Length: 581
Image (cartoon, rainbow, N blue to C red; front, side, top):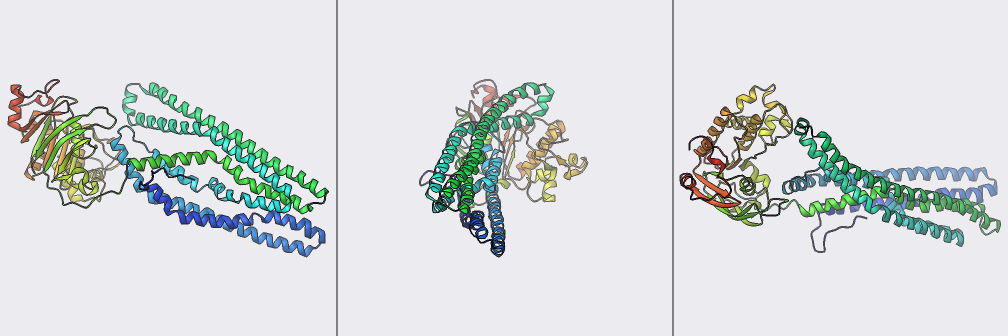
């Protein structure tokens, strides 16, 4: 039903593994379907016995016994159908439970490696797949193999009954294929356009303040409508085509059930079958054709589930999970960057080319250079956020990508240029949503100089904030982000423009935090355009157009910049602004 798209010899994706674990459940559903379809012969056999035995003998006792037996069998049928549905529901829940953490991890990796493609679509895909597996449409695939059995029974009634059933089944099967051909392309296009429309709307909503302030809502709404209307058009085309085929299928099935009555009446007149076979034949034909009719009616859901399965498999193939290596010792903070070449996700040319330098434990490095020199890209590369095309970043001699992120994370601190807080309390944001350690949270806040500010909030550390910071100003958000970077005992701290939103008081707190990190022997990398910060560093690295223009002690690099011995390409480094060094 869902064909694995892994190449021969390639390890199955987590989704394929999870579906493989569900095989026993699907076998159980198939086993129950065997008895369910046997019991679906009961109505036809009941009618056959009533017409040919009860009416013929005019025996009330026979009719009563037949009816009691049929009631018992129908109760059994209901119980088996309930059990089959319950198994499928639990299979769907098991699939979701076994996949949710892996799905989140792969989604996270995709968001890191493909900025701008952040979307909850994979979660929707998993929901679509689970709903199909637990819905009525799947029953068509379990009941469909019984079509030859029902036709064989019709052949047992009469040759022409069997031939008529085969013709009817072929016609409905052709309709099912026609439905697949007519709806596959528009459904696929509609699915892609729906994803694009949702992603564009999410992007607009994330920047709602800018949109509202600058009166951009109508323009963006028009752009969104272009995508949304395209999705509606393709979906409508697919639905219209499916509706035409589905209604033709239902009409034909009803017509075939009526025509077989006419055929049976003719055969009964010719005394080739009994009147009971006439009625039973019509019931059996309807039962035989029902899976085909259900398959056509539920094809849209099946197509959506199949596309969701393919997208999820592709996601897991591109961003696999669970490949952590052997645990490594806690890092001390020694860092080396070797011949680094990195192309940012979605870019065509490298942002960094041949970058190399090394830091000892406790070094404090300032990265300076003109705009678009690659400073923020280097910060992401050092932290192992973006993949490398060439070269290595080593922390204590180990490739940064060899570390288990969950184990390495507590020893790293990162303050990005664009501060991202998460919905929750301030204490949860500072402790990185792990188990809240009040002492460590307060220590990090005091180190970042934000403790007093937090205490003045309505609920202190328990103040709930949103993803954009809620009632916090830009500077306050940056200081909470700094506290998050300093939480615990980090051995390597990377701060990208840490004072871009700070006032004088905030900058004083930042300087105090950096002095504390220096005393603790923490390795620090700073990207800043303020000279007062440079007083604390002992090393400097100058980037120009993605390459190292100079690296060495702070005093040597500052003199070289002032003397013009370091060529920084386009413009002067932004670090030569403000204050005295």
